[in-house]
Length: 247
Ligand SMILES: NC(=O)c1ccc[n+]([C@@H]2O[C@H](COP(=O)([O-])OP(=O)(O)OC[C@H]3O[C@@H](n4cnc5c(N)ncnc54)[C@H](O)[C@@H]3O)[C@@H](O)[C@H]2O)c1
Image 1 (cartoon, helix red, strand yellow):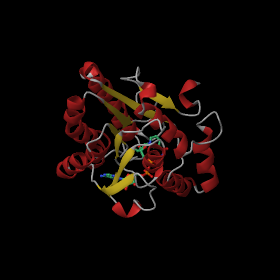
Image 2 (cartoon, rainbow, N blue to C red; image 1 turned 180 degrees about the vertical axis):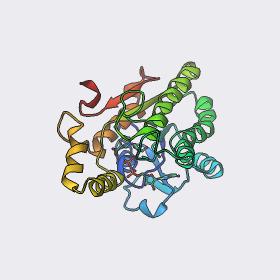
Image 3 (cartoon, protein in one colour; image 1 turned 90 degrees about the vertical axis):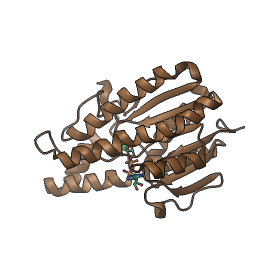
Image 4 (tube, helix red, strand yellow; image 1 turned 120 degrees about the horizontal axis):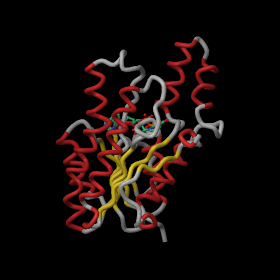
């Protein structure tokens, strides 16, 4: 018996990184997984039990169509983007884009998926936040940290409003996680500092464990929050950061 037998799970940004690892991990636990990404070309080589299709988390119609197809019991909102810089670097366009992708995308998916969950009397919503949020600040993550703090507020609000209707809503706050976009960020910082190795050292040393997480380690938490094992847990940020915020 898998821990997610009989459940239907919709994942945004499942083309790579944490979203992809989570889609695969939930399928391994018996869920019927709907793995989606704005870039459908990335949704290859998925295991049995995974149905893949394009979904743009920035687009109301695309989200409504995807939710209607998946009819999810589990919704994992993973889409997000990291902007670099302080408050003085932030442009209005970057701010608007970040809030649209990192926060409003979750409004879109939750608004579309929640009525079906309420009708069925059960649902687990998992939102991707970050340790860099209201948990801790990180250098040059002004826009990003602000959006991810908003995700925590949204999570608590949804959890409270639907707590008596069988709905749970939690969010995940990872430290640094190995993923394609993280590799891009290390490369970009390396170019700024004139040393890739120095950039890598800075990213890794933030975690007192002396390493970054694998996407599979975050996926294990997604499986737990999706499953009935976490049935008494709602409205919380779940920090998984190699000790970063625990110092
Ligand atoms: N990697 C980290 O260190 C880390 C740490 C904490 C939180 N997170 C969060 O985890 C999530 C995933 O990050 P990652 O680093 O694992 O993956 P990633 O950044 O490497 O990949 C992101 C994926 O999102 C997809 N995407 C982009 N725009 C989209 C849209 N409009 N609709 C649907 N999909 C879209 C991309 O095509 C890509 O497949 C993000 O929300 C990120 O903020 C990442």
